[in-house]
Length: 403
Length: 234
Image (cartoon, rainbow over all chains, first blue to last red; front, side):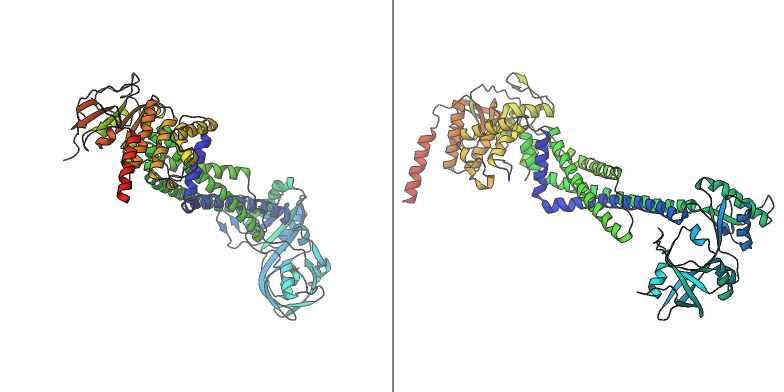
């Protein structure tokens, strides 16, 4: 029997039990749909992390107190970073163009009418250059402000919106721990990190102000530095290590008591986490496909039993075992492929909806379409074969007598 | 305990020639169905030979037997065995599909076969829209469509009333007059009288094999049936 005829017979058989066929396809639909959506989200997340790397400042290096042993365990004990460390780095390395100390605390912030809890960062004026972050309105605080420890600050978008809805915050006064600060400017919006952290929910002020006015007198949380070009990153890391080891008087056999990381490395970590999550999702989706396949096998076995008499008739009028085998196998494949196509559509639609919610670019690649279609056809063949084999090996006489 | 062999047929020898019209008779369990299944290449004898047009077919593989069924044998069953929800003409086309014949030729040959049984006007009716007699005529058309060497009919009138049975037997007689070999199983002696030769089975043996001296004429029989029904109604 010609392939087109077999296909027609398969479609007719599936049409006869529309509800049953649809329910049988559901497992495959869910499986393929989630594979498409998951790989799309995964690829989108990777791309997002890449673009964030650029936004964060590709040439940025973060230095933190506390070393990292070979095993990857951080040691915090008794290690510290000082203002002098940052200054020494810029002074002794030609590759480093700027540095800023970073100290951080979370406090509640009050405007005339509202209050808001937000992380507050003490930094210097190089912060915006290093983080590649512009001022939307107003201005960054000045070097003069830094030197004098003036009570000024710059707000992130989220803070500005929450404290001064519908108003221009520039020139207004906010209070932190009852100390008044003048708002000098508002930062450009930067959006969320892949981790979901809102980068715009922050206030920056001069490091000196932070220490003097908020009464915080402790060591730095980070030092951010900016490297001249991306090619100099590795050399810059070496420079920093040499300078800091020297500053901290670490003997040659001692471990670093600080950690130097490029943004690239930080994001590698984020990427590897998102990859692991994608793989897990893929496994879950594959399980759904296998369960869907078992559903197909189950329904095909029922179908073979129901249609025993039809099989007998077909054999009596000349169908070979191969004809019957193909008929049922193709029926199973049609079932799973149709499920695959519907799943593909639903997966893409889910991706588009997620795109609206996350703002990420959901990427459905040709490869993921190919893999999921191949997967569903494979499921059809694998789980359809046994019932088809069973149908083909029926004895025509017994099949004809079957009631 | 367990399975044991039942010898449905025991060492019988029969020759059926081209153009014959044989009625195979016997009580249930006499072996006539097994005999038909072997004739139809649906069953394999445990021993012995079966030559169809001089070709030994008894020991063929299942696939080879399927090809023989497809090309040389047309089946007509007691229960009609049409595919439900499939139109008359598509049912008739079914065996042609397994021969790989093109759609156009299939349609032509199926129509020709439906004409031979007088059902060409009902070609697009589904089995549940046809009477029992009409369904059996579709089944006969299906058997005819492949131009087989032989038509095997297993109790073809078993589910039909006497008037429709006569119509079906008239079709068989006409087909046989046109040169088609027919073997039919029946347990009704009057149905057997439409054939040219009767073979009677009992306990796996042939107990009688004879030429029918006075064949029944469907037209005369029909007149009788109509006459009685008029009397009954009066």
